[in-house]
Image (cartoon, rainbow, N blue to C red; front, side, top):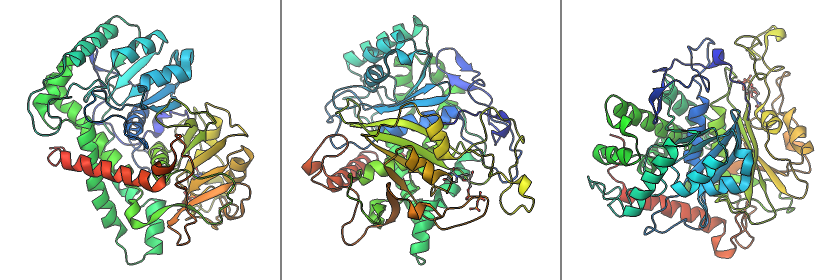
Length: 520
Ligand SMILES: O=c1ccn([C@H]2C[C@H](O)[C@@H](COP(=O)(O)OP(=O)(O)OP(=O)(O)O)O2)c(=O)[nH]1
């Protein structure tokens, strides 16, 4: 992803200049990201890199799998992981049936983990931690909820029980992790940053008017898309809260203290921690609602199927598009955020919870790395003086995803890009030339010509499969086929439809178990 961290353009004023670190209490993390006042008119607040990585780790935990990771009698919780090197994302992982996210990172990256920052959606167990520490990582940040080896297992998680009666195994593991933490070189901490002022509102507004929802509104003039978005957001908020937030404060305190996070059990840090957690969950709920549910009949379908290689399941595509939407909140364009993620489908069956998929790269639209505030023009095509327009200077999301990629694009593999805006005439040939075989996007802008930027080539682009956001086609020319193997290697009964159904059932089950877990 793009590395430019031009602090002058970090819009929105931070509520608090310090972030919370579990080891030494509040600590300054300004080296990672700063947030200053918005200087550019029309510029929305921007997510800090720490917040982006944290959100992506939570989202990776929910990567659609065709098989449940564990049944409810198992103690290990699924975990998402983001591997970051020099502020660039090098890997997005999640637990598989057999392996924890930390183990997968060791298998995939080995000694390349040296100097990396790892963002976990749960505190990793000691088995993972000892290996990661030995690989020489620089920092391990984790979400301060129930850890990977659940401390809530067997004590009525989510059903209103006040006390925690964790298993001996989990308590022993928590103590071992603490020992590893205090005797190891890497900084092992909770790194949550407060959001810039108005971020939640900005994300909600921009998500509800994103290109995907605009396309639905355009196709269905009578439909109140914003209302549907709000309903979906409420549902998402409930699900995500049940997943990542402990409503019961006593329970949360007890878990924090077992994990050695006693600093956070006292005020004002406890309230501040919970506020930061709930704010990030609210942001994730908005972004995850940028695509309405499959109930509306919309998905990523091919207009003219090439039948060259098969498409991904709709739930995986939706998941990756949301990753791209999250990235778009790091944009430096004063007007429009664009995010792109490139994944490849490897030939062999990988150990990752993502199945055969592995991350190639990701990015967002931004000015050249290291550029300073107002160094480049920021105006759009409404500005008469073309010298003042931004278009010649902004590096597009797809371009940054290619520039900062962590893996090569292999001719023999199916590589795919997920992008939140229709690729423009600069990017469409670039995507094809790079050897990317599938594009998942919206064609809302296709056919537009604004002189400084145009969208004329996408429609005619040959040799790349294009899956655009549209209503399900009646003749079943849809992405995915139930009889073909899915990216994670499962066949037949785990087809696209059952996959989507599985996600719906999972959500429903969650909703049932967490009726009262909305953030108080
Ligand atoms: O494939 C693309 C196309 C565009 N962009 C970025 C570049 C630029 O930062 C912004 C341009 O967006 P748009 O074409 O919407 O132009 P605008 O003038 O900002 O907005 P409007 O649609 O109102 O004309 O989107 C990408 O990252 N990838």
